[in-house]
Length: 190
Image (cartoon, rainbow, N blue to C red):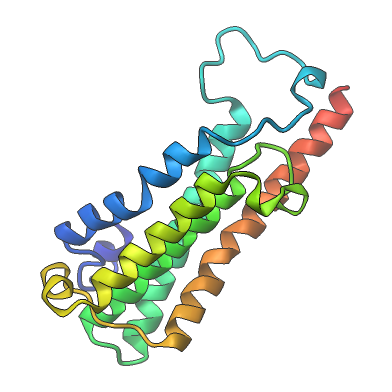
C-alpha cells in the first residue's frame, strides 16, 4: 500500500508474491515444530485462560517484526531504484532481502524469550536445513534463465547478496530487544 501511495512502480508482481510464499514458508515453519523447549516454562506464570494460541508477547513481536520487515524491504527496493537499478533488478533485490529477513526471523523464532546467543545453532538441524533449502532454491530460480524470466528475476552479484544478508539480519536486533524486555518482565513477575 505504501508503495502505491508513493506512486512508485509495483513492488512485487503477483507471481513474485506467490514465489515468496512458497520459498519462505512450509519447510522452515514445519522445522520449528522440532525446536526443543526453552527449559523455563514451568517457572513462568500461567497464561490467562482466554488468551488463545497467540499470547500478548507473540502478538507484539509479530507486529514489530512485520513492520520492520516491511520497512526494510521497501527501503531495499527504493534504494535500488534510486541507484539506477532496473525495475526487475530492484524487485529481485527486494525479494532476496525478504527471503533473508524470513530466514533470520525463523532463526530468532526458536525461543520466545531465549536469546539467539544462548541457542545452540545446530540444536534443530531441520530448521538449519530448511533455511539453507529456502535460500538455495531461491538462488537457483534467480540464476536459471528460463525460470527466472517467468518470475521476473534478475541475477544479483555477490555484493548485493551481502547487502541482502546484512539487511535480513537486522530483524535479529528487533527480536533480541523484544526478548530482553520479555525476560525482564518475567524476572519481575517471579
